[in-house]
Image (cartoon, rainbow, N blue to C red; front, side, top):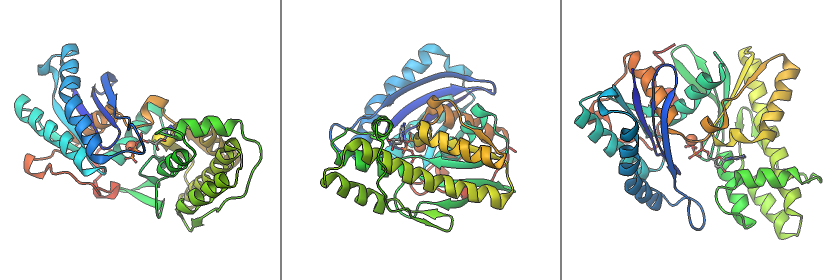
Length: 323
Ligand code: ATP
Ligand code: FE2
């Protein structure tokens, strides 16, 4: 069975076709803001302009008849972007006369992470621009055990990066700078029970910049503090759930220092650390296609009249029928 998936909740417009065994095709065209951060309407315009070209490239590589279902990212995400993707997905499903499956974006990060890393029933740390959550399965639902109370860690990193004059997305550049930092400056470490907060950390790091601290040391201090917070909450969930697998997913998961900190924590606890290859960390079409396939094969599908976008879609809302 082959599923075509469309991802376009925010910066990356990506279309992929997967079957049960592998990712067969993936074509992406990211939106890169000229100045500042992601502008929702500009991103949506980018997606609307590029999507037809990407879809026709996909059908240069595969025939239309091979596609058994259309999956799309239904939310959470930026409203204008979600509407472009949903409209295209509905049109394709109607035109090809195949079922439609609306996929939760967070769930898709998690499921492709499990698929491409081999983790079975992990505690998942999902870290991206918009989200920072610790998730584990409880019966027929994924539950969020802890999450950010304000902004996602990726958004926090991007804000700091912009402030110190780096282009969007700041994550990879901050990681590089941090490697050359050596002096640790104390920054606000905010963990409340299982939840986290990053905005105070950003403000404090911005003040450090204003006072003339070297950007390498700011990046280093920022990463050490934020990633220690994330590692602490993940460890607490692991202990509470008596689990022994940790899975890292989401765009920020590409960060090698974060991976290293989680690995060390896992080694100390006798747990195993899992992460998918980098190409499946950040937003990608394959994660939507694959999760759509899992869902469809276990009984899910989305009627056209129920395919409205869900900008605040939570992972808990989806019943797990495929495990
Ligand atoms: P979501 O809707 O899941 O929040 P998203 O739109 O933020 O997704 P992702 O691709 O999952 O998209 O994550 C993008 C984020 O990942 C950006 O904030 C980016 O700066 C960050 N990022 C990418 N690479 C790195 C890295 N090496 N280190 C830290 N952050 C990174
Ligand atoms: Fe994402």
